Amino acid sequence: MKLYRSLIYRELRLTRKRCFLMLILFLLLALLMLTPIMLGGFSEPAEGEDAPVEMILLFVGTVVLTGGFLAGTNNGLQKADISSGWKRYSFILPPTAKQQAVSDLLVKLFYILLFGLLSAAFAMIYSIMGDYNAFGLMLNIYLGAVCIVMLIDVVYSYIIMLAKSKKDLGVIGVAAFLGAGLIIKVVDLFTAGKDLLKGDNAAEQSAEGGALISDEAFNRFVTALGSGKTTLFVAAAFAVICALFFFVMWRSHERREP
Image (cartoon, rainbow, N blue to C red; front, side, top):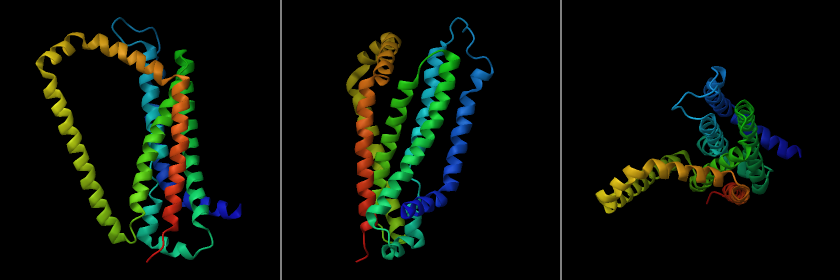
């Protein structure tokens, strides 16, 4: 246990500034979204204004989504270890690759729990003030955001695993930037091609009945997003991604210089 405490303490110590900045960002956004409550935004809405429930979904979704992104994002420690040379030195230290991977996963889960509790507290405030239970919806949005960002982190960590020095990090960084730009360009061209194939007739139909279809689709989406089946699916995806994260970090710590 002392070994794990030491590994976790090291990672939390080295990432404390990054965590502090993320907490400030999250709290500032949460306070901004609480402004309508402070100004009496849940009084009876005037004619033509959005209903309080719609505002709750908007504000809670924005903050919870941000919390999930911040919780699952890469902490930058792996890149810093390679740049400083600690990565090569750590190969001769007593902790095994598996133990270091367990430490990485526990720290990741700690951040997920921290931002999850903050997001739940924010959602609870809005649920009480607006008389609307958004807990299930909040949980699914949060876990979904965490899964997406953690999956990106897994890919990023696997790519970083190929680097042996600061110079390699620069080359990999440029290659990743160019690759991301190429993917975005291909997606943009694909989307533009689909719009051209639809033609003017489809655009006119969308303009005539778009609002009604949009509202109905949004209501169905919200209902499905807050359902128990979605919770089970997202929880299963989260467990799988955690296992992938552990495996990639294990392989990363096992790597030896040729």
